[in-house]
Figure (cartoon, rainbow, N blue to C red):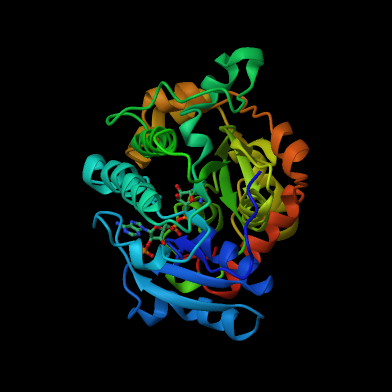
Length: 356
Ligand SMILES: NC(=O)c1ccc[n+]([C@@H]2O[C@H](COP(=O)([O-])OP(=O)(O)OC[C@H]3O[C@@H](n4cnc5c(N)ncnc54)[C@H](OP(=O)(O)O)[C@@H]3O)[C@@H](O)[C@H]2O)c1
């Protein structure tokens, strides 16, 4: 049982991020003082949306300069905090050097933040933003999981530096988090493991999250000939923020939490958007057959390898989200609401290059 005092500041690492922005908003609405750890507090374009949120809420925000690869750089931001949200980690698929660009910041960064938590006596709970990527790489892994669905008991055993390196980075980072948690008894560790997070961005002009690349491809005509039925999970960013909030403040929260609202696929996502935006935007109207994706996929995107296509296209993704519903009382937004709200903001903000 861990009681968190809402009068104490709460640290959010990577506060500039897509997911973190909504966590910060939720905390500010509660009147909490947020310690926002960011790489460069002087980059005003990256924090303008957070400033605006703080201005219009009961809570307040203080910025701290921290970097995942700089040991000790989260200490000042953590002082006095009982609750730490560690969200910072690169989320991008297209990298030149997976070790330097993904794995080192994810794993060493987690070690950096959690080892600092061992030195700061105020800390009582650490909530790490892990991912379903720490549980599985490909939809076929969910089919092969016990009972044909992933649960919190499953770990990703198929990712590597060469294959699905982002998933590998999240697996190593979460393992490191549990390893460090076991070396101490001052704080408890809770993880939130979202599937693909979609929803409206709070900082549309400065997004870095891979989440928007999929929606961009749906809106800019890349997938106008059709989309594959590639099994994935999906969840709304506002629900992910609520899940973090509950994981932080529910005294009994413990362990990992699959935070995935819908078992879906890429074609279904495009088709759902098509109902509202299909007359104006080149959304996919048909599901691409697997043989065709095998033929052209590898030419369009370097992460779209034959192995990846074989293990995901026409393979259902199935995750069991019953733990977070039962233990944290979570309910999830309908898929159409998440998709339509995301698309609307992206249109308003001119985030699609070519409208056809
Ligand atoms: N979006 C999803 O679908 C999804 C799904 C599951 C889990 N997650 C997890 O959610 C978290 C946030 O992802 P997101 O989608 O919100 O992506 P995002 O908007 O790109 O946020 C990533 C954050 O990490 C920070 N960061 C990256 N490298 C850093 C470094 N070396 N030092 C300090 N900070 C660094 C970024 O800071 P800068 O702004 O300075 O670059 C940014 O604040 C990540 O842990 C990700 O793995 C995301």
